[in-house]
Image (cartoon, rainbow, N blue to C red; front, side):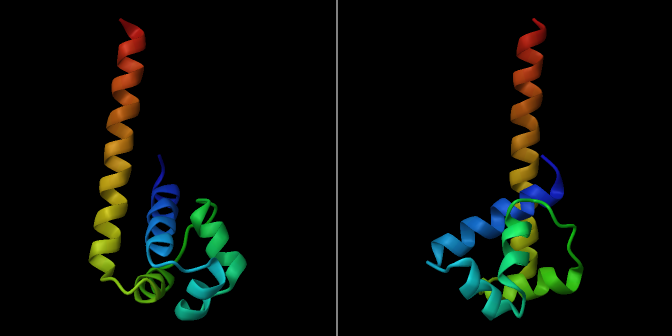
Length: 89
């Protein structure tokens, strides 16, 4: 899993936990609704400024957002590596 997709999945999870639509999060973060969708799909390599805006819109600390994104990426990568190793046996 690449970093963009891991960030997108993390953003989507937190947005949904807050009960927000993409449009509502976009308004909170000062971003466009379609931009939020492309972030959640892992299509954007976004700037630090926009990561800060997203964290604020999600009412969370940027460090927590990034930590959860990296944890998801690492967990997914380990799972994939384990599955591939199992196929090699």
